[in-house]
Length: 100
Image 1 (cartoon, rainbow, N blue to C red):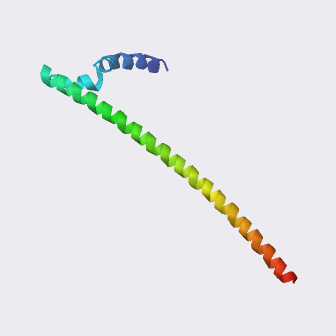
Image 2: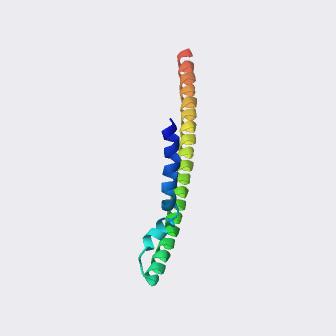
Image 3: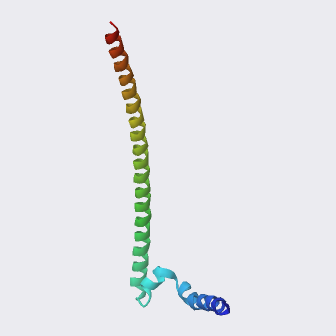
C-alpha cells in the first residue's frame, strides 16, 4: 500500500516535462528552421479552425437529424391515431349495417 502512494508522485514528476513540452504544436515544429516553423504553426492553426468548423457542421447535422426524427415520431403517432379513428368508424358502420 505504501509503495503505491510513493509511485503516484514519482509518475507525476516524471510526466511533468512531457506536459510542459508545449504540446503537439511545439512537437510539430521542434528542430525546424524559423520560416518553416512559422508556416507549420500557421498550418496547425488553419487545421484547428477547420476541425472546429467540421465539429460545428456535425453538431448542426446531428441537431437536424434529431429534429427530423422527432417530426417522424409525431407523424407516426398521428397516423396511429387516424388509423384508430378509421377502425372505429368501420366498426360503427359494420354494426349499423348488421342492425338493419
